[in-house]
Amino acid sequence: MEQQNSDLFSDEIKIDETGKNHILGLASWAMLIVIVSVLGYVLDLLSSITGRNNEAVQSEGFGVYFKTGGNSIGGAILSLLIGLLINFFLFRFARQSRSGITALNQDELNRSFRNLKIYFIIVSILMIIVSLIVLIGVFAIL
Image (cartoon, rainbow, N blue to C red; front, top):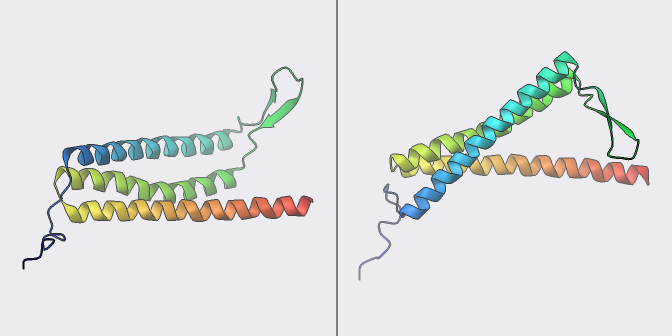
């Protein structure tokens, strides 16, 4: 009796065209997210350096003024470093998945999904930390 799944772990990618198109679409969206995020971090850093982010904005029809911005240079640099760390793994996913699909390289595709896994782990940990800080703040106010 012959084993039917003997070629399950071969180096050949067994994905149909629809799956390939979906992965290429994921890679394109991931690259777009990385580019927009990095541009946002750079603009935030530039606005904190120039000091143009301290403006009073009137709320719609209520006559209440809110102070926008107020990021310090240190906060902008910290958010830039954390954002670059997070988006580095998303960038690697986008680059490696695209090259893995076009070259039909299973190892490259596996490495790309490992980077996507690391990205989501880091984002999840940061969200848990922020949620805990907010929860502690709410309990401290009450």
